[in-house]
Amino acid sequence: MTMREEIEAAAARYPDRRSAIMPALMIAQKEHGHLPGPVLEEVAQILGVERVWVYELATFYTLFHTEPIGRFHLQLCDNVSCMLCGSEALLTHLETTLGIRKGETTPDGAFTLSTVECLGACEMAPVMQVGDDYHGNLDAARLDALLESFRAAERVTSVERAAAAPGE
Image (cartoon, rainbow, N blue to C red):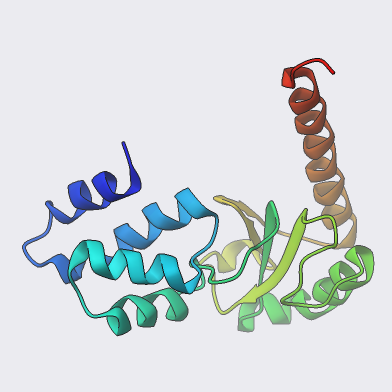
């Protein structure tokens, strides 16, 4: 199914096509990896809604990305509960370990580091979301172990890609 067909199917579930903007953005981001201007315009065109409505949602919610992000998007909560439990020190640790600042992506495209306002998991503070998974009760050692597990997954994926590539 094409992106257009998926968006049309999603829009059919709503009485007003404007209500389908968020699902349409999720579909488009899954297809393109992020939501650059031309993709936002395409979503607006498919739905027949004002471009500004699409742009507003795409730039308001942290789950949407208008710029490319790393394969592992590290979203560290910096709200009160997490801050009181050490998220500021964890952010510094991640920046030092990865060699990037908040809002940046590692040169190899593996990690993007962001802070988010609240992940709604205060009982696990400090908490970080990576993809669809939450990782809580974090400290520097747990972060290092997580980063290593992500790097290991990257190595496995690279080997699988190489094995699947046609012979040279």
